[in-house]
Amino acid sequence: MSENAPSTYAVSRETVNSGGVEHVSERDQLAASLPEPSAETPLFRAVAVDARRRRSLTGKIFPRPDHTRILTVANQKGGVGKTTTTVNLAAALAQAGLRVLVVDIDPQGNASTALGIDHHADVPSIYDVLVDGKAVVDVVQECVDVPNLWCVPATIDLAGAEIELVSLVARETRMQRALRAYVDGAADRGEERFDYVLIDCPPSLGLLTVNAFVAADEVFIPIQCEYYALEGLSQLLKNIELIKSHLNPDLHVSTILLTMYDGRTRLSAQVAEEVRSHFPAQVLRTSVPRSVRISEAPSFGQTVMTYDPSSSGALSYLEAAGELADRGAAG
Image (cartoon, rainbow, N blue to C red; front, side, top):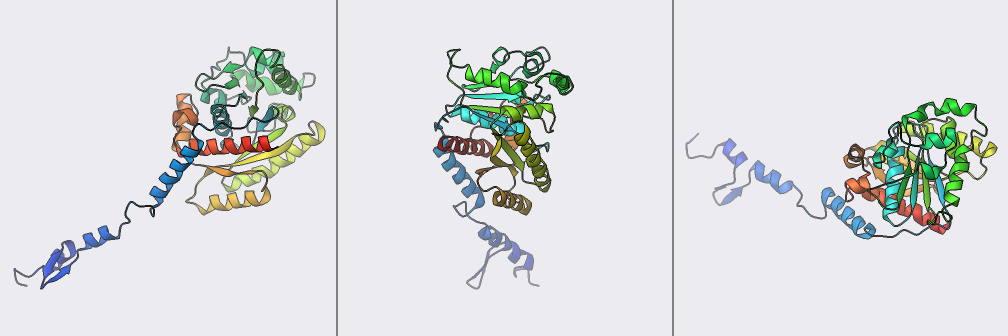
């Protein structure tokens, strides 16, 4: 091969001009094949969608229900985003101008942690209300990060409450009586009424969860977009029917939220489609995606609504809260 003749390697790596004909290198061909940063790219579309959601939701005031809505956030399967949903919905509703109370009855106290509420062993908590008969007004704390948001904390003492409640009179209705007295007594205390009460339950059907079901009118079910979540849902619905038949005839499943949705997987789409087909009236249009920001927020004692309000997770919970509020006002 002549020294002046272009090598195969050179032709494949560079743009050369031979006899007036331009040869394009592999690198240039690859660069030319890449999509421009335009509206056709998935990243651009995602950013644009979030920007539109942010503009439509920021500063929006949600409508008030005509009465205090008490919702038990429950799912017998653990790890479905139950506590995360409770605190972020509560924060979103409060940021939109509504008065919200979170009742933490999970002995782990994760909801209290996420709201920045002190809940060490010596703090008055829901345990004192259920076991010792203390009034809710004596244990409730205000959330410092979010105006209009209060919390009844859970402490480690609650771990033994299941056993202690067994021997108490009217053990299934103790939360109902204490909570109704607090909510109905707002005017006597010179306060506005609460718009929403969200009860965060442990992932089991013990006496604590039974108390929550009896105290509430509605059940809010977060469902993880995975197969095992569907199995847990059928058992949960059976238990709700038992509570409805024997203890609380007004109890009903009003809202279902799809959580940890991963649009890249076919499984998430299939689970979402199946849940929506079985519960068309209850499932919210909004689904909550998997999000690092949502997972990080509790380690800073915050909800994602204050930790990173512009994240996709925060926007999703704000949209879900808006749907919940619109349904409440319409009902």
